[in-house]
Length: 148
Length: 148
Length: 148
Length: 148
Image 1 (cartoon, rainbow over the protein chains, first blue to last red):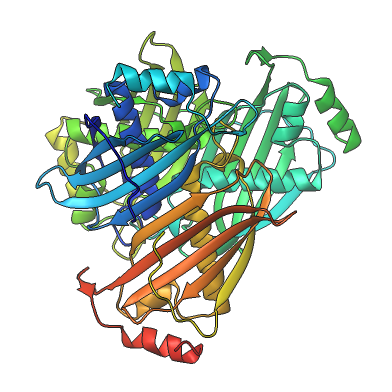
Image 2 (cartoon, chains in turn red, green, blue, purple):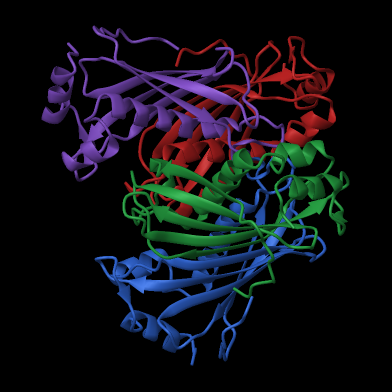
């Protein structure tokens, strides 16, 4: 993945742990790759608990939507039924009107890397139109958490 | 399942066919039971194409919601990756303000029964409150399709 | 639901808590009914942690499968994004070669009932054929936990 | 996305059409981004019907697995309940022991682009270990369909 330049002092990170469910495992007896989209969502949720104000409901209450426009995942090592893993979700600052996260999923027992991922969200107004300017609530959120 | 009295002259039925997806199969290499809720939804969708006016968007446009309040499934024989099956969705008339369906899923190749199921939907108004009286649009739908 | 006679001294129960995920909510902004199959699975998993020996991997290691043959759900009150709920999973003893559970899902904040459900699992051998006799490992599990 | 050099004479492409299901739509009333992993799977399935021999079961029968190690999606325009769309799945040849696909999802009514995506699969042997050399069945598949 070609990195865009991110300037992030300090690094905001949320961490959460999960256990693989039976329904997440496919016929190869590993977690079906599509289910990682849920894990990333859990990661953003956990991040939102650490640094409140950037959750789906906060964004919605401010009159915006924040759909995902780009999602990338690299799968390094499979998870199996009953495995436990840790998701680290790191906020990547950008001047553009975007919310960028990078994710690292590791096995809980030995720290082995399972997958890395990234997502980019943009802002839309109530009519679903793209907002090119950073919404006020987002600039305030950045300020509150010391993101420059 | 204890049957409530259904009076249904004529029997309205919709039929659709599907092929098992990789993501629907679990580690026992059969369709994970929870995925049948999607198949029933496909069945209602196919029914709605045969007898228009009872789809989610029709109900929503009339100012109502129709959440499922009861769902029952009996699994007789498993489906595996690549299997094709047919869902028959039968409307079960009732005087109460409810939408009742019964379903039969059979293998497409030999007609073997895979599962039977039933769902009951009630009506809610815009505020999510239960409607005990049959909505006008629903009575019209019944009349249109000769359901007495 | 017509109850079959259950004789269960003592009552084995497992409890777990969950928070509604964004991906579980539908366009009516309530948890899509099909997702409750996952919650019931979480309930069985939590039960299995309380009374080990009846999980998917235990059953598989003993040379059996335990597919669900009957699942019933009654939805009383919807869950919304961010809501937290508690699942109580109760083992219902039966002399037949079956694993029967009943479930109660309640809101974590005020105890309001959200849904009730039941599942029945049967045993299959390595060739996927139905086992009509209680497997030895299951009789031992019952004995271990004082189920008569 | 940084493209690796692909030499593909002729261009093998499979096409399939789908309709958005109720259960695929989220509370913003658009298809939840995670569900596109299913659509890509439908795309590969359709490709496999056009150019048989590269489906999950073919690969499995040849003694291999082909897990996805990289998945990228760009979302351009949302799909809503009842929308119909077409997925074009294009095989991207590579000398490495990989299966690479690129995908384009367009609205069925006006051809508007909805999403683009790519996946990379590698080969694993029966023990789940990475195979760095192209399996014989894969080289035969390439030969059969004129991929050089």
